[in-house]
Picture 1 (cartoon, rainbow, N blue to C red):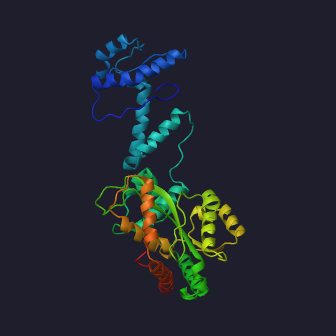
Picture 2 (cartoon, one colour):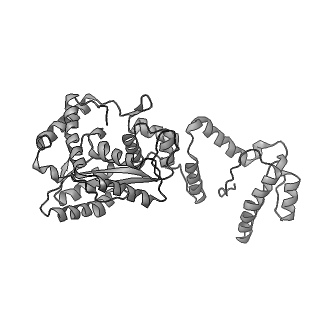
Picture 3 (cartoon, rainbow, N blue to C red):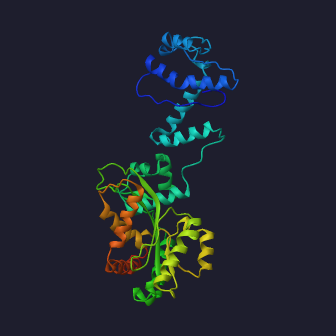
Length: 383
């Protein structure tokens, strides 16, 4: 480290002996010294009196013409780097096992090296909140380790997302949605009753106009069981839009910009090929890309009718209770060599589902609405 910033970090298991220290100097110190001298800057190296820093290390510096600042023995309070270690230990004592993930530290380090000033941005972003929500909806038994492996964020950030942003709690190793208020239960019941009436309990001719949209994570390795290791790679927020006949429309990372300029224009084109007179009724949840002002304006301009969705109701989304679990069960235990291969396998599995399976999905959807009304808005077991 120097007054202008930090250089390359070395992480070493165990103690640092003379040979390890000389290897570090050879790899990192000489390039830095050469860069400083070439640019006309003065260069002086400072180290304390640790055993690995003396004799052979001093001889090496003399042979390589490294200017060395003489050091006063027994003076740790005069060493700048001791102050840095002190601050790092304070950070670790506060966070413990919840300290930032190594990838987060590496990102901070890179930003500091580029001259960034100020505290790093939080990992609790709307994008990460949406991804974690999808993970626990698709697998109520998902662990902290698996979420951390997917997102590369710290346990502290995951805790904040789960408990403060999503309001979930763990009960017998299963994530349970946050406790619903009476107002939220009433909203679920009202939505179910309104939707049942609108579509004649699933018997309306307008049912074929419904397009149900949602996003999912697609793993390059879908876990076979909980004792296996965490997924090696994950493709974040792949979108699947389908009609009652199970037609897969498009897949990519979801943002409001992509949703309104690429995805949904393609959806409309594909649906109009099937039925030029179709009047699309779109059902989707309340994620940020779906509720953005830009998305609302676009749907209005395209005369797309919106079937709203009650908050905190993953068990009332067809893709969440049917499509994603069914397809992932088919792919479970398989390994894919690339993200594209995983997406293609997912897509093929969707397209292979027979029409009667999609009919059963929509029948189940309306049965779930009736169950929600019967339970007065409470969550029911199979979500």
